[in-house]
Image (cartoon, rainbow, N blue to C red):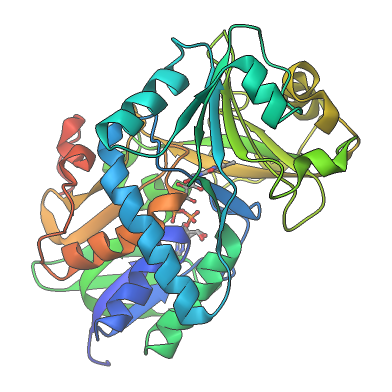
Length: 383
Ligand SMILES: Cc1cc2nc3c(=O)[nH]c(=O)nc-3n(C[C@H](O)[C@H](O)[C@H](O)COP(=O)(O)OP(=O)(O)OC[C@H]3O[C@@H](n4cnc5c(N)ncnc54)[C@H](O)[C@@H]3O)c2cc1C
């Protein structure tokens, strides 16, 4: 048997790829195991791009981490000589008392972020595509934009390999076990050993870590690209990324045309369907998915409500408080689990790659990750 690796990382998606790259850059002997292609569109990171924004309406405690994420995305761009982060400006739209608007303003004030609050009239003057209710306002944050998610994963995998990491695609992990000083990982092809294990398997985490079964719940999402009736309104430079909270609490989000034709729109939590990612039937799209998304276009973005161009399913992995789980397993400190999703985790991958590499190497992370601890939920020990 060969010498154990320093680290095995299961899942070469957003967070796995970033951590493998960071570990390889630090000189670790690391193996990444991915059940599908590298990159792939079957997990949580497919669909061209993901929003990045400083005005973190969910909780201002994320702002320092996302500030670091911007720096680290820029560092990755410099390393691979490719553009991965596009700044478009971002709008958080809703009534003045909506969670999105209040939360966004609170984050801007707490961290002195550049921002403007736009009345509906001013919003329509600058971005005429938006038809929002009379009392809605918008928080404009000039630093927001998007990261090219599939390209970023490819870039991390390439730099990891250049720095000596080994990555095996299309090799699903079927089982793992850990003693105090060694982990053994079995795939459909082979068995590997390492001193440390990072499980970053996205929506498949509950099938690898039993105690997550009721805590990290995969949910079906759908993204749709439509042909805009007035294309000039929806280009990078004329149209920002946005989140719009409806008066009933529904959140819509969208992007300018980029990468593939069409304006991209999503409805947060879509139809509320929990799924098992090991099955495939939920990947089928139907007219109800389209109707569900068009409702938003009809009401507040009519100029984007043209013919359907593309659509794609994707998966959120939601935890009850909609934050992340990043921790050591309670009875296996050499096993680290990472579930940074709840529908908003991609943007952090560049920063969490550093944090996860620190955890794996027993270093104190440069950020307070206490809010992501597993013991905020009631879970039993593994053994
Ligand atoms: C529709 C949608 C829109 C979103 N919008 C945003 C946004 O605008 N901004 C934002 O920041 N975040 C957003 N998110 C959330 C973000 O995309 C996720 O937080 C992020 O992709 C999670 O990354 P991950 O590495 O945990 O999972 P993934 O990138 O899915 O990676 C997990 C990998 O593990 C692999 N794997 C699973 N099981 C095994 C196994 N047994 N063996 C080997 N490999 C395995 C999978 O194949 C996969 O490649 C969105 C998510 C969705 C679905």
